[in-house]
Length: 324
Image (cartoon, rainbow, N blue to C red; front, side, top):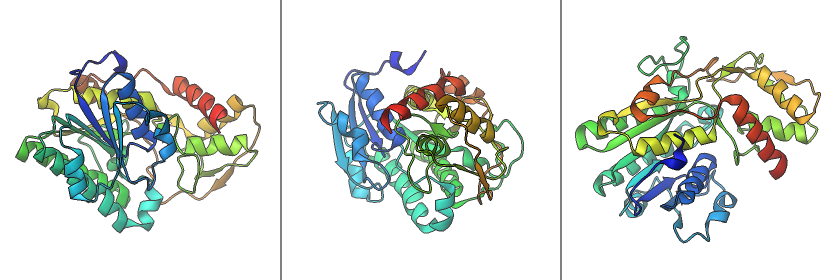
């Protein structure tokens, strides 16, 4: 079953933090399409108003410009909310190495503010963005929950701390929390611009513009690239998961493994380009290989990703060709 067939109480209210971002805006759109009420909180520091502009006219959609670092804001926006999908965070491993204090403020304190506000206002389920980066230097593939190494960046550490708070808020306060360990999400509306842009949209834009992309490292690093609709499914199924599964973190991937150089050539072929990439130095803090064991999410959340890499990348390329 995909997410579109999922059923909630017709009066359900969802709050999506970071709702103007890549993942957040897709969640807002999907939930509205299912007929439910959505509040979107975003301070537009990395999110974009244009991502949610088509939703503004929907009577079931409310946009609140605000910051998860302000507890009063978090308390206000969670009133009367059934489900919180906390996507508000700053991503990018390299940027976190440059700005560790800011990552602490946003990704840890901000998430804690949201958990506390959700607890005080009786939210039913608190689903939050974690990351495959929590696996750090643990070498074994596929990555399995419970076998984590030493984290390699401030970003990874913030997500590890969020998961510990998620566990504590279930154990101590009874708040049902579910951590989504995202594995290299891609798809429509992912920002291709800037030095911290994700690799797939960045490569697509550069190839479309006749530029020569740079691959950091030798291109033999591998990733479990995960299409956005799989992530929407995981978040919504977590909202319907049992309380027994709460306080845990779950791998949210496609369960596959693609080498970066192969992905690059795949994009070249799809776009009809013949461009040899530049190779730059490997990035500090990056995990070399990534591949998700998704059996825990399958068992406890009913997660069953519909989109493998081949299916997802075709949809993503089509979207960028049309929208860039």
